[in-house]
Figure 1 (spheres, rainbow, N blue to C red):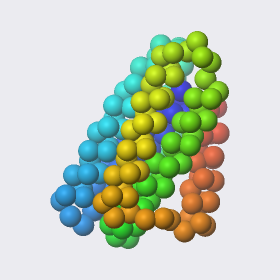
Figure 2 (figure 1 turned 180 degrees about the vertical axis):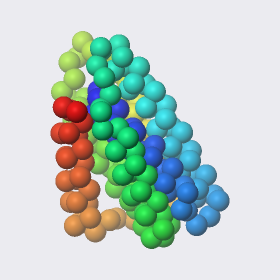
Figure 3 (figure 1 turned 90 degrees about the vertical axis):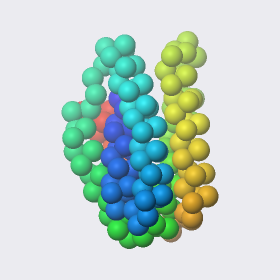
Length: 159
């Protein structure tokens, strides 16, 4: 659950950064709406961490700052690229959450319910990004994003 919490810290920061640098108020509003939904996920995962007697990642300030900077940069590179980045981010997060659902014990209904709702929301965010003009990121960028996510998830698991 700590890894999922870190993911929500990053998602919230990413979308706030993208909102800050979006070219239109309507797009900024869409990013802020996604950030607010990620804020719900953040609260749910934090509450679940507390219930499990676990702590959040010690690196959360670093994750937030890095994701915010990446979001702001993506926005500066243009709305289409920013939306494409959002769509790919959400695709990768959805895959992570699907894998997490497979690993969670069936008896942990509370964690499973949280992860399932988050997964559904991430799918909707990706679809929104595509509907608003996002496209496919180049393969090297997708690979780099997967690598960065692996570093984050492995680090967050322990730290």
